[in-house]
Image 1 (cartoon, chains in turn purple, red):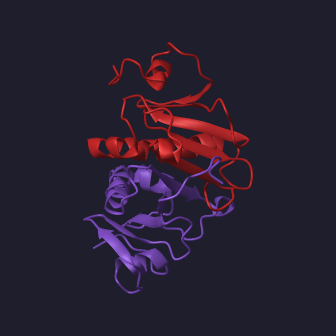
Image 2 (cartoon, rainbow over the protein chains, first blue to last red):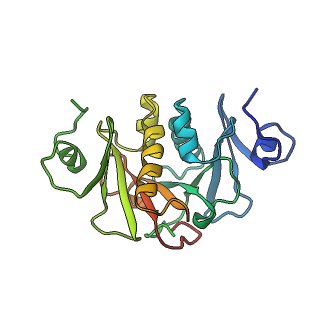
Length: 118
Length: 118
């Protein structure tokens, strides 16, 4: 049973209560397509456990972000975008564009990626 | 002694052989300013150990990315950009803009951050 926050949209996706186009499910992570994709591959990778943001997940000291990075590469390979490179982005706080406060890495690939990253 | 790759620029920064404007050093991570900053705060956070990219660090299963996320928040707080939000970006592969093959998280903050992230 995952650590859960009652009103969290992503916790509901983990629990199967809200639909999402899931592309990969691991023991501790779930990956699903962003509903407003910004690249041919734009997948969100989240831990099943609820942490507000990347630092909160990191402070838990359970290797959650390590697993998200591995899952991101696996999704990128499965989508055929790994060879050309991909980006993994964590937003912290509304000013950075974080809208759901359950940590999620944005995997983007399948097109040229500009710099700066927003 | 950190896991080291002989010709890696960032390993040389870790070893103090190449100068960098270091803003935070932890037991396993170092944070220093990007030489081509894209935001008022643009800091690179790296593990002292050499891993080619985020997935390689993740596969090591040592919590390296967890520590990078925690360090990123600490740097963001120290720079006064945490409250307004910040972004942490990992590029994997030349097509995503990765130019140094020692995993590094780009912390960006201190200005509005657009979407998409590049």
